[in-house]
Length: 213
Image (cartoon, rainbow, N blue to C red; front, side, top):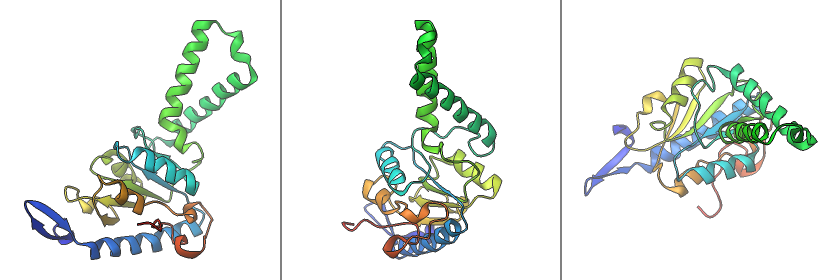
């Protein structure tokens, strides 16, 4: 991280904001290229500060996200993930059609618990039908498994990295405070992160900065 640090004051490292701007520009250019090819992007952030921001911004942009827990094998064992999502559809159909009333109270309760568990872990990626073109990661140190799986499959990783992270594990590092909600919001995906959407205007490159930032 040394090259991304401007200096040190009172034992606190100060991030070089020029490197942050360079990282953002590189990420914007890269995401524009991938989404224009019709590839999807996932945003991953499971730390407490990131939970609501990741979900809200991903839903606004219309892209898959993980904000509860990264399940091991979510990328490397993708067919199993798809089969669990298929199971979720079956459970939802049982509930909507009213057929769940045909089960005993104990069986119905177990089925609803199963549904809630799948929803909690996989609801954000239910629209993902194939491997993504890239991952946007908040704190690659915490999301180590996601980064390793992406590395193994050759999926590029864009990450907000703090001074305690290893930038060599990601393709496009964006130096910043990964504990600050405002930093996470700056890395928010723009509408053009939807596969095949070229977008327009200030967010056409894929990562947008809120007007108030």
